[in-house]
Length: 222
Image 1 (cartoon, rainbow, N blue to C red):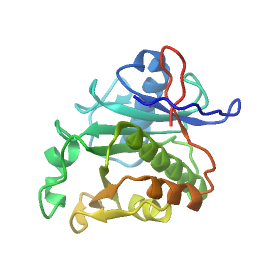
Image 2: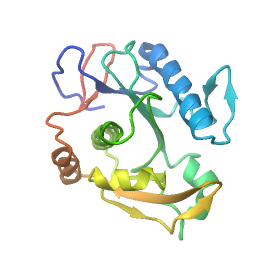
Image 3: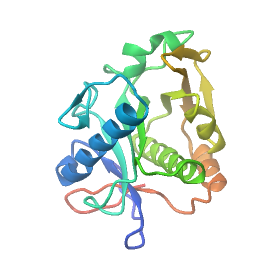
């Protein structure tokens, strides 16, 4: 993984890139993420997901998953999170949401899937939620560029899709919106490049990289 030096102010929230390599540093943050996913997706949004011991976890929370968790330190309160999956292995869009795509969904070693965007349960609606999503999108793009990923797929509901567009993410629908339960879902694919990242940063007033990779030598990334 490429390593670039980035300075963050003390206590300033950052998005931690969590992989199999550094996951042992993040037990507290990961458990808090799973608790928040249960509260947001199952309790608040009434998604029909499985829960266990007060957390939401599924088959795609696997060793290969990469998590993006926003917090000022690995043990600080989690303010938001998302999950990235390789698409040359089982993933949600191909396994469960294939019907959202007019053609075969994009897959391959240079394509990731972004899932489980989860704001902290107490995140206010409106601008605070938009700002969090913009930072997460910037974090996804920074992480993808580090790993040499060229495209990211995701599924958005009727509330998330316009927020992603407003944040500056240039994503193309893979098919029409379809009703699923009480919501309407659309599958998207977004190209990842430096110009797109620059656009998201400029549109949302993000002046520095938002991500950090904490390894054994406590390096910072992106």
